[in-house]
Image (tube, rainbow, N blue to C red; front, side):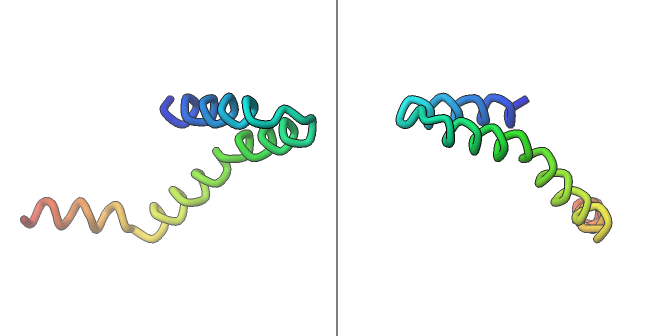
Amino acid sequence: MCGRLLGLLVFIALLSVNDSPQVITLLMLLLGASPLGSWLVLRRLLRGGLIHRLEERRMIE
């Protein structure tokens, strides 16, 4: 939910500065593709076992 709100705020802020069709298209592509980027990051973290290692450290401490 926070990512959607942040994307909306970025879209509105940049649109208020420049409202050319190229900027609108670029913003829609970048903001629309951002879930793919976060998915790739989370996938690498989960496959690498980073989250599991962090949980083990919390249990030990």
